[in-house]
Image 1 (tube, rainbow, N blue to C red):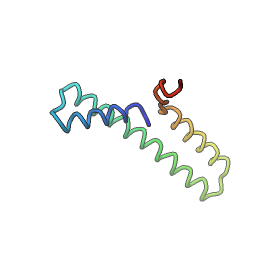
Image 2: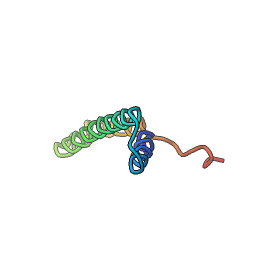
Image 3: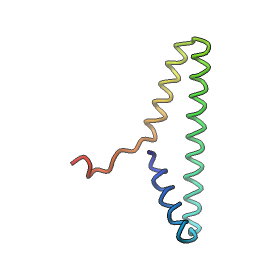
Image 4: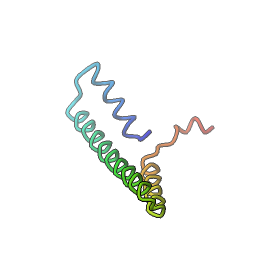
Length: 85
């Protein structure tokens, strides 16, 4: 899960009990924007992968797979450190 998803969930839960402050609303919009851009980039790569497989272009498919891996690693978040002890 991306760190922005944790914050987005926190802000959504706060919103259920009270109105968000102007800063919190701005932060929520930033999280939503980043998530949308990430989803769009990932969906684009998945579509490229589908096209590569449909045209039997295995070199392109390998390249697309690498891009997907790179995108997914970029936004990975690790477990909290207390799980590692």
